[in-house]
Amino acid sequence: MPPKVSKKAETQAKKKAVEDKTFGLKNKNKSSKVNKYVQQVQSQVNAAGNPKARKDAEDRKKTIEDKKKAEEQKKAELAELFKPVQQQQKVPFGVDPKTILCSFFKVGQCQKGAKCKFSHDANVERKAAKVDLYTDKRDTKDENMETWDQAKLEEAVNSKHGAKDNLNKPTDIVCKYFIEAIESRKYGWFWECPNGAGCKYRHALPPGFVLKKKETEEERREREERERENQITIEDFLETERHKLGPNTTPVTAESFAKWKADRKSREAALQKDAAKAKQEAYEKAKAGMKSGMSFSGRELFDFNPDWAEGDMDDDEGAMDEYIREESEDE
Image (cartoon, rainbow, N blue to C red; front, side, top):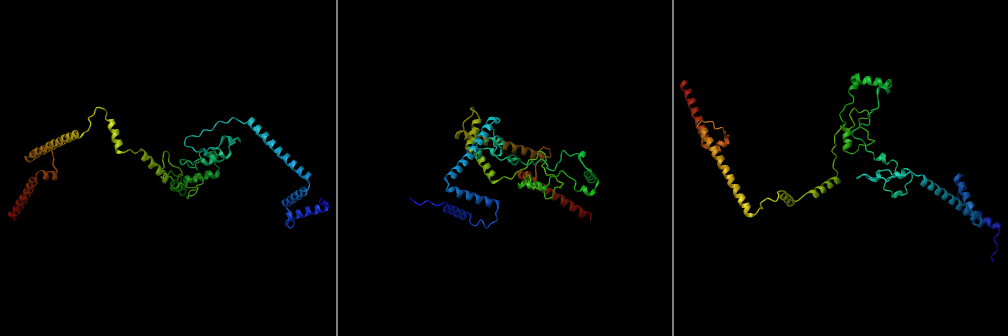
C-alpha cells in the first residue's frame, strides 16, 4: 500500500501548480482581470484534490443552468400566450423578399433565423427607398413668412431688389451636374452639387420627363434574346399571310403564274401605248400652235422629237443674222 501523502506536501504541490499557471503575472500591474484570473486558478487547484468541493461546484453550475433554462422556457410560454396574430406576408410580383422587413421579426417572433426569406435588418426599408428624381430636396413646402425671422426677411428683400443677388436668383433650369450624376448613376441620398447647396438651378426633373437610361451589357443581351425569340422566319410569315386570305382563293401554280404574268405584261404594254399616243397628240397640237394642256420638259421634248429642238435653234440663228444685217445698213 503506497504511503499516504502528507497535507504539507499536498499544500506545497498546489502552491507550485498555482505559481506555474500564473507565471509572470505577479510582475505585472495588479488589474482586476489579473486578480480575477489568479483567484480562479487558485480555486481550481484547491478543488482539484477535493472531490467534495468539485462535486459542489458542479452542482452549483448545474443549478444555474437549470434556472436559466427555466426562465427562458417561461419567457417563451408567455410570448406564445400573448403574441399577436401575424398575417402571412405577401410579396408583389418582381419584388425581392430581402427588401421587405419580416413582420414576425419586427415583433420578435420569427423562428427561422438566417433561413427566413424576408430581411431581418430594421433599416432595410430606408435602404430600399429610392431617391425621387422629380422632387428637389431643397424645397421647403411648409415654409411661409410667418415662420421667418428678421434676418430671413432682410435676405428676401435684398434678393428681390438687389441687382447683385438677382444674378443668383433660383431658376427652373435643370442643373447640368444633376443630369450628369443621374446618367453616370452617381446620384443618391448623399450626392452634393459642385455648385454647392446654394445652386440656383433645379435638382429635379420636369414633371412627365422620362430619362433615357444607358443600356447595360446584360440588358442588351436580354433584349436581343427576346427579339430572337419573337422573330419569325419568312416561311412562317408567308404561311400566316396565306391563312389570312380565306378559303375562296385560287392556288398558285406554274400555269396560273405564267398566265398572270402574261396578262400583266399585256396591260403594261397597253398603258404604255395609250401614254405614247396621248403624248403624240399633244405634240401635234403644240406644233400646230394649239394649247394642248400638256406641257413638256426640255428633256422630254428632246427625247420625244429632237427635230423640234433643232428647229428652234435654226430660228434663233436666223433672227440673229437679221439683227446683224439691220445694224450694218444703219451704219
